[in-house]
Image (cartoon, rainbow, N blue to C red; front, side):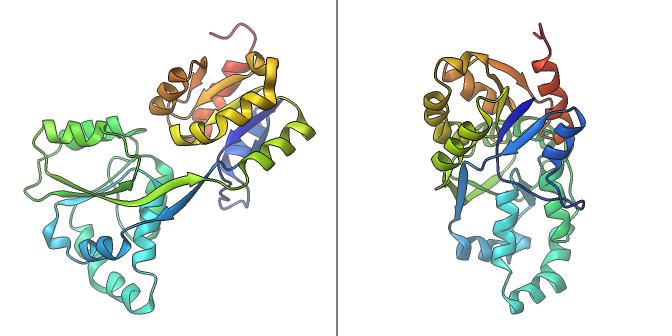
Length: 264
């Protein structure tokens, strides 16, 4: 059975995207089509903030792109040395809060220890942060231009200081239409389509509706998390499944259940 995932491919240690591998274990033939590209913003300002860990009570990462922004800030040789020799250690003396294992592994790669990675979404991470001792200094939160308001609001309501900085924005992937046309012409209408973000839905839905035609009612629409599920529902699309956590195993398990006859 063919399933479509609207995300870019990321190889793990085995040289294969973990989502494709996990879905394959359930006998599902997955294809990945990227629907978003990213451009980074305000890196000089972000770099300056990262250079002064003494001004902050910790870090919050809710997306892999925010971690990439840190890497970009320190990719010059001279700055890499400063990060390795002093800044990394200073930030590690403070809590580094993270949503999900994928983001956590990237944070670990730049040498930082993480907390809260088992929290599958921003709301659960906010609850986790609120359960900890409130920092005297603000938590630094690098985020995208379309960040959700749940985490900032929950922290504000609890009196936890936070400073957000927009370090990237999502833009439509230039190849969305061509890649979707190619998929539909070669593979036909997929049994399910998984969306990984509200913005990914925004940039791809019109093309999917046009290509699917009357067959769109046969497709099981799947969301990687509650925020994306709400975006699907707002578009009037039935959500057949929301992954219990943003992981390959949870998604594959959810899709398999949704594709079984008489699944609820």
